[in-house]
Image (tube, rainbow, N blue to C red):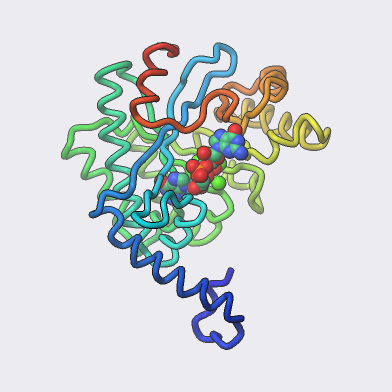
Length: 280
Ligand code: C2E
Ligand code: CA
Ligand code: CA
Ligand code: CA
């Protein structure tokens, strides 16, 4: 929201000015983060709720800043979007996740899948990213079906036709599409009709209030029923308790993710878990 700033610098307090300087410094650092090998991916398992077996994995980006330590994606993804670096970073995430899933397919299960988070900016008309991904997959002889693309619904509004067209093309190649943070955007229900999607992820804010607030419980239940009827798979995010797990099971939610099941894991930790707990 503060990014509307450039022309009206004088409106900012000295504190805010420092934070703008801070952002500029961080963006410059981020520019070199890939080549300096400061970025990495961790993987949070997505479980089948009924069996509590690993179903697939979501890749989550980490930035180990040389002097500031770990910076959360919630803080640096907006900077990457603002600066345009999201394209390069997003391509890096795509390639890393593809190489990882290919390895896990060889080692554990030939139908394993990884979900990656993507920004709507990666599908805009001013970038060739989606076409580059398909070319890259072909070059490395990797199966597009190994990937799921997560996209947040609230930003899908802008450049709608282009984004929809590109998502349709990627889906045709075999990738699956997932709407992230479902329920938090503006017109959730209309997206389900307009976009052909494979998954919706119920935002963790609903899951976390479910046991305390009966309205949130009803909303969750309605999302699950609706998705099931539309043939869309549902993943509940942010499961932190046995009680939430039970409520989701009772309402027929098939898949779940959250600290109660497993935190985001390093590749090594994930492999240890895959060896012992898998539906394959
Ligand atoms: P998200 O896609 O909604 O990812 C879920 C976030 O919730 C992750 O935070 C995850 O670590 C956290 N989480 C998982 N289980 C629980 C739980 O039980 N309780 C709570 N409170 N949190 C839980 P993380 O890794 O910090 O990522 C934050 C956001 O940054 C992501 O939200 C996603 O929007 C964005 N992000 C992460 N990696 C990427 C990426 O490679 N590309 C893009 N464009 N965005 C990314
Ligand atoms: Ca996500
Ligand atoms: Ca989410
Ligand atoms: Ca999010």
